[in-house]
Amino acid sequence: MKVRFAPSPTGWLHVGNARIALANWLEARKRGGTFVLRLDDTDVARSKPEFAQGIEEDLRWLRLDWDESFRQTERLSRYEAAAEILKKKGLLYPCLETEEELAFKREQRRKQGRAPIYDRGALKMTAEQLARAIENGKSPHWRFKLNTRTVTWRDGVLGERSVKLPSLSDPVLVRADGSFLYTFTSVVDDLETGITHVIRGEDHVTNTGIQIDILEGLSGRPNRIYFAHMPLLTDAEGGALSKRLGSVSLRQFRRDGIEPAALTGYLAALGTSRDPVAASPRELAADWDITRVSHSPARFDTKQLLALNRKHLHALGFEQVKDRLPEGADEEFWLAIRGNLDLLAEARDWYEVARGDITVPEQPEEADLLKAALESLPPEGWDATTWPGWTAAIGQATGRKGKALFLPLRRALTGEEHGPDLKTFLPLIGRARAATRLQRSLG
Image (cartoon, helix red, strand yellow):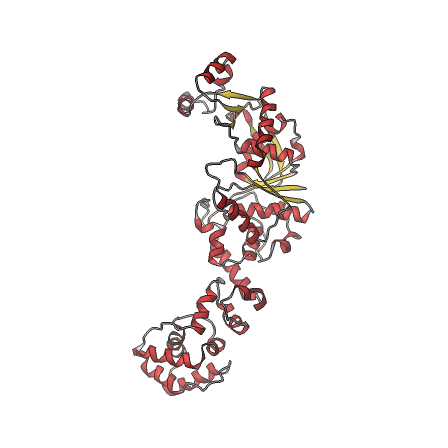
């Protein structure tokens, strides 16, 4: 088995990309195969070094490694050679129509009630006409002459699939400036690098029909490649999950503090009947089965991801997070706050509450309670028994209980209305900070 993940370095990876990368990686690792990272960077104008670097960083963050890697711009001579083969077979032909002329042709066909596909008008051009046009400064683009048949295959996710080639325009494989399009370069790479399984999104189904025809034109054997197309992700309401939304980019999830194990566990379960479990890719590989993926689009719900992330964080030990906690944070701090976190980044805020100089709300209406709290403030040597003993004394002095007792104290001590259990968190604040904050809250 040999699979490839082939992103274009024209932007940041999003969760849809990550799901495809993960599926390919899991297939390869479960079956002892090879995972190839291929950067489809032939769109020179839009491909950026920072995006290429970002793709590798995001994959490593997800704990996805690769056995081989290359960029398509390193293989331009191979595409030129493959194009020559197709030209000699009469399968790649030159076209001189401008975008305006093509748009006019499509509109005319629509008015005639016909499909707006290319009419192969360029095939009527003689060699002399082509030579004369080139002499006059025109540069042809090159189209692949599709077969007049229906391409069928057994898809690894979607089942039987077919593409009627006569219903499609002959695809442009080489632009007028000599650059190559993905439809062509992908076939050449898959053929020459020995890819055995192509796992990608459902939006490539039509491409697959075309690429099988190109593959045969290059004397390849398409039945040696296993195709699997995963339904696209939607948002929580079933709408399109835009690739341009920064909110679903891996970079943003990293910044927000989502744990990679939560994201990989969630993506691996999406579209299956299984409940997601936060886990590293290596932990997921043994149980992975692409045939469990549904034919229907899967909904990517950020709330579900956050819930899984929260559950995962609450179970992490100090050793697993200590390198990502604020400097000075110890195990006592982690155990006190982890049950209150949605994202690990929130630990920094709670460290500031525990050890820093924070602003607390003034509560003059709670003066009797806050004065009683100051007067009964226990001496140093605080531990898990301090909070229940202290609040019992305050309650006895003021007649307060429940929310009327605990909420004003929490506001005064932490500046928040919700947070970690003060039984374990209060000792981290300490007596001096507690006294200062109670005094400030009095106003």
